[in-house]
Amino acid sequence: MAGKGIRGLNEALRSLSLSSQTCREAASLRIPPSNFTRSMATEAPLPNITTSVNTSAADASWRPASTVPVTIFDFPSFEPVRLESWSAKHLHVPLRRDILHLAVVYEGDKTRQGTASTKTRWEVAGSHRKMRPQKGTGRARLGSRQSPMLRGGGKPFGPKPRDFATRLNRKVYDLAWRTALSYRYRRGELVVCGDGALELPLPGEFARLVGAGELREEELRRGFKAKWARQVLDANGWGRSCGRSTFIATGYRDNLFEAMGEVPNYGRALDLEDVDVKDLLETGRLVIERDALLEMLDRHQSDLVTRVFVANAGLPKGPESGKVLVG
Image (cartoon, rainbow, N blue to C red; front, side, top):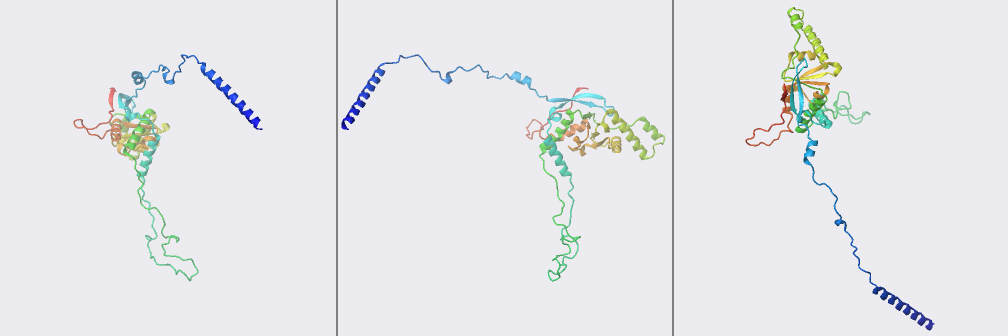
């Protein structure tokens, strides 16, 4: 057994010496040097990419309009009188349905009366003594005559006078006004008349009938004005078949307001002080005086006028509108 172990050891040493000799011979063989070099990714040439922007081409492709044309018409002939330039921030505001909804809800909440009131059991007239004994009668227990369980008693958790008005940012509300006017302008439903031109002139036949005594009664006069108003609105395409019209003036116009009061199916006439955002969106067409439109825009441009006062520069002003182009 010992001889076999020694023999195996000798064979292992012999194989080890052969492998070491092979390694020495391999080490003596040198690999010839080469000119191979590996290029790094950062050393790759950059593509021809233009990093500069042609500002002149960009400016030429995007130039939003700063003004919009507005035709001033005569009333009731509906003839164009002149062409004016109005600021795009007044009559070309993008449509925002969410802002219009906020404004209409805000106005509706402010007009709610909130006068509903009910009496509690402590406000109902009568004695507050207990109606019958608590026990011994075989009937249900009962308090005073003002109990809400009895007819004529108080009402629990009933309505009381309250204020339903909500709050809305002033700038958001002013933007809603100009958004409504811009929506009407883009759809061609905004008709601007001259200053103080929204007065309905009556035909000469009216004066002749009045002079002849045929229109002595007030009812006949109102009927004549109503008939004349229907003819004028139908001739201009502002009547009932076109969705009615809203006339807005800076003051009370006798003939126009009386005639429109007789034909509510054809439209209505409003004073500038009585106009809301909802009134600008209800009817099919909006006929407004030029000075009334300027006054409306001047009141509702708080988001366009800066509050910063600069000395020797005058008061802050908003965008200018109403410049005559062709007249």
